[in-house]
Length: 149
Image 1 (cartoon, rainbow, N blue to C red):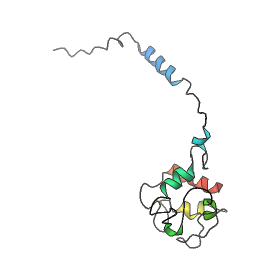
Image 2: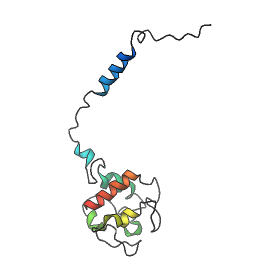
Image 3: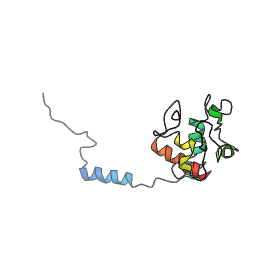
Image 4: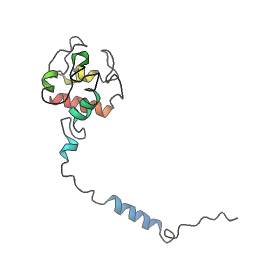
């Protein structure tokens, strides 16, 4: 029984240089364009790469049933995206973290809405209370979005 390995007939005539050249050609090809790239990079604020923070992050992860939606308002907080959200947040006193503001326009990094998602949160349960916690990148996007409100 022979243990000799044979190349596939199609690949047998290719050299390493040919394969490397083909790979480089594929990797250097024009990726094309996106007609509405702003919808994927800026959306509802948060800066490049964050997308629509208000809808995709706050709406999807916070304003959910039995949490901070218009019906439940856990902690008296309605985070439902849309018109009026900023007015419900900016420089409004936090109910759960005394002496703090939900969104502090002078110091966004001290906003309850931001500090509650951090691992170092010193004010009650880390948010979101159920489901996956925010990644470092999502935390940064949230802070950037809060700074823009």
